[in-house]
Length: 512
Image (tube, rainbow, N blue to C red; front, side):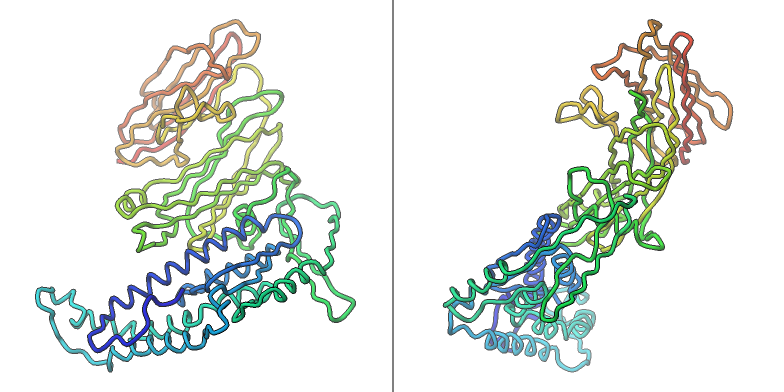
């Protein structure tokens, strides 16, 4: 890539149009870098060393976003990925990247020089409001503030070959360029790939607590080069390798002090008891506005990328289960403002035997390179008799487009419940409470549900809704409408089946 045009612009050149060219080139460069980062994310978790032969005509590194470039290099080295680059443009032996570099730099310098000395003059173009004219005091001040952008961009992108050279050399490879006789050089690549030793070792048994274990390899012989990961996260072997997004969450949880760049909520809802285990749905809730939105001006959209992680630890600090979700998203400009103020929610069920657990949660904002963490407890005591789930206030009820997932307690009869994790509801919310009833096996009595709604400690209403027969999962989903009047409320639900009964409570506040 590079700037989209090179040459003499003349005294009538449009500096604003030139900056638009630079923006377009920068966006294209970021897309290429994102594509390479995606490739590294896929290769990184694979065992052993990985080699990529990259055929490219060069890369553009936007000067104001070099952290994206550096993150690509770091991800490749951490994931054991080596790039060998071939500049396909430079297969022409007469191609001179220095000449292209010189022309680009001269072009950038000429654009900067056209901005003139730092003085203000008022010139209003016909038919253009003064405040919007490129030559108005405001427009001129903006140009002066950015007059060195052209040179910065030119220095960064003048030689696109240099970027792929840096990518190759910093990850352990080399660049093939300025020749159309590549047979010997490609053979050298294969020689480097084939002539190396790989050493593996089983770590000594330690607690799978999710913390990072450092690896350091020292060489007793000079003249050798070692390439190794910096370490690994101690997690149970589930048969599925950690994804880069899960590793980002574990890295946040392993950081001291724990990061807290933005707010989010997490908790667990108890549902079915079966076979001595209890089913808990771990839920996340966060305003999308807490995430960094990266504008893609040429595509008229914004990009978000969040990943969620929850690790469930027993009393010894050992991970017994984990829940994760990667949420990349692109939102068009015409709906951005509406989506920006909505909430991101996610729920996933785990099955736990009776014990006390600590759940450590992390949300990583990949676009903003930020993270936040949280912690909550689960006191999982064995319960017998008729079963009743925790009560959840419903944020939204969605129609399912796929069959009901029997492992998801928030799905029933073609519907999916999105619960509020917060207990502080906004004014205008019409509260519904969702719950599941689990009749006791072998108990022939019909379950009876009694629900009391209290406001400020006083009973406002008592409901005795009819209880239907269990569905295919063996549970009975219930959705109860509550009052929409402001105040502090408590819901007490009691399910009785013969001599067996279970009670659950829920407290929430509805703002005025």
